[in-house]
Length: 243
Figure 1 (cartoon, rainbow, N blue to C red):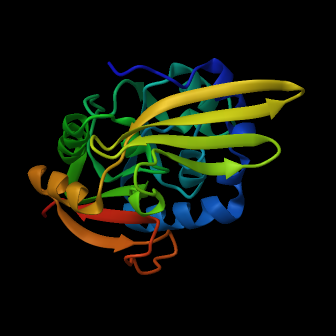
Figure 2 (tube, rainbow, N blue to C red):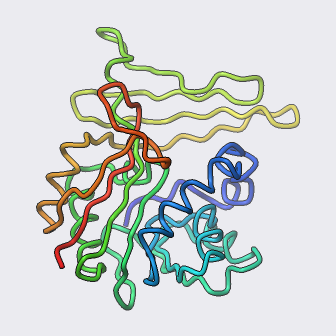
């Protein structure tokens, strides 16, 4: 079982620590995109967290189940209105099994990178394929490895420098592994949070999908289906299981 970095302190403050993720202008395009793919079927969110996406998707009439490593995050989800219809399995989303099959499975906000080895990421695709209906879709939102932003010999990239928060990634390009470090300045105190991740290339994900018997269906640069180009910093990729 991977180590859980999202403890009760983080879970209880998740929306306050990352408020931009909960902006309706951020959430609504995600939910609309996923609801369209789910149709009348069921959806499975891997790394469901506190329900940032699952709750509004459920309100759209989609039956949502989830897998979550952190019991504290799942407890936070189930403290919210409308959560009684969402079943959460506690476990590693690369291996945990959920009853039934699904029209859609999805991983948002770089969560595939929480799996810190290539083998674990491959296992995730295989696990998703076991859960999907024939013709079902697997969606991942993830950043493109930011190697172009690194000068030769550099290993650190800041991603947020503001009065309330300092965040930077410490990167090993040889292994594609990194540690993300956060420093929040809250009520006169400094709170820290660090966690490991593994970057993964779009072409690498496509090969993982092929190993799991799926094929690329679409790739976009954002949830509004803007084209993915050589300058895109992230992508929304959709793979499909054969009918």
